Image 1 (cartoon, rainbow, N blue to C red):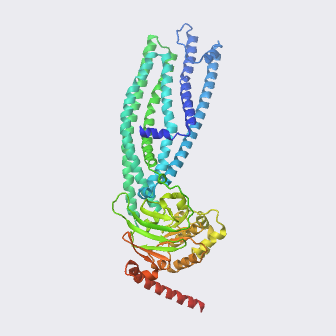
Image 2 (cartoon, helix red, strand yellow):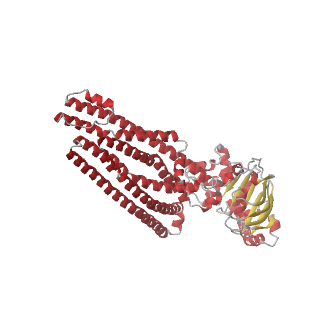
Image 3 (cartoon, rainbow, N blue to C red):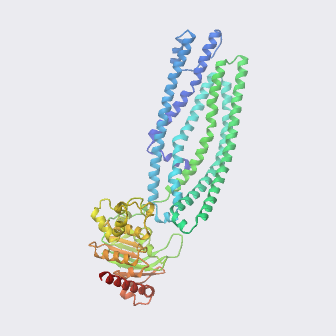
Length: 612
């Protein structure tokens, strides 16, 4: 019942159009119940022509039609007048059907558009933790095929159900005037059909749930392989991935076959039941005709009206099929929509941000564990400082950045320019912090558009300057189309280092007071790394730079270095101070420092040779 209510929530904002479609659907079926009566009237007039004394029932057509026909005495004129009135009647019906179809399509697209936007917007607002645990292929399916399933049911199958009821009521009403006994015979099958449908629904609902789950898993495998096609090729792993897809595809196929088997049994039984019902109506019609209680004209309309009672009930199977799928899809959509938005627990302040960051006794652990990932983290970053955070893999470096971005809640205190982080609005905070990731996402657009997308109002000069600082300008000049080069989906046409530099340039055009480089220089060679760091120092901007890195040469140039070891701060200081202290930093420097000395020596030799 809850999922059924969720289906009707989709109509919110379109109730006027929904009611309009309902009225047209009822009117269309109601007018259709009169169509068989035109044939009855025609046959009745022919019978009266052959046997004027025949005792015939009054045809239950509107009086204006009967009056129009009765004005004629010649049989040919009677036939023509009946045909004219039937054409007019059908024209009105088809006009109604036309507007009904148009309105259904409009309702379907309105509901689908609203549902997609709402679900997509809600998914965007879900927490970072939720997205870390969700499969993107499953989310894509929910926003696409699940919405199509639910909106199709609301716009079409519900109207079919309403039309079915309207056909039964209007058909039974007309049948009553033809022969009351045949009417009850025709309606007698409905309880059997209803019971069969209930049993069928209880079976098919579980099967469709399994089908949706199997399809979701199949979509996840496809999405992962399409996104990671380069990785698959790099490891020559095509055979394994094909076998994995084949396994999921086989599971999906078997679940579909299992559901189709139940569908086939139901449809076969319903068809058999409908044919028996139609045959019984025909036999009773013949029996009453032989007794003289029914005319040939009444039998013909009775058979046609029986179709109005039989075939709509047969269509109940399709409605139940789609109803089962829609409830499953609605449940999947509801599961997402019931997830709390991360902005439900948000701050209220929009303070001016300069980049003065203070962590004081900060602790953090994930909800599913009692072990703290970060403990007693305390440090201060002054505005305009460049601070490097180093540590072993998994020590909590990136988590510190995520706390600063309010991706997770924390214990203790984090302030920016004296304002507690919890009190600052998340969107406002993130709009003032630029983050460059190790594996940045690029759009299938030009290099220029990928840089400008962070600040559409940025001038060409600013974009060119950002490219120069990011050491990207030389690479762009080698591209055939320069800044207008299409980078491909997720930047597949660029190298890892080029992608990182595009992402750096993209952040630099935003003039954010705080910039975070989350291992964003890892794919660069030492010289390019050095060039970028020099260019950043020479810029007039006074933003606060936070650099998460494993490269000691990068950390060395920072104003302050924070060393994280096993979730705690081991040391804080400059390169000169930390390289002389025993600990993680000095150990790493002893290994990487020699490499830097060799590199700088080679660089100086290269510059001397170039001068010569």
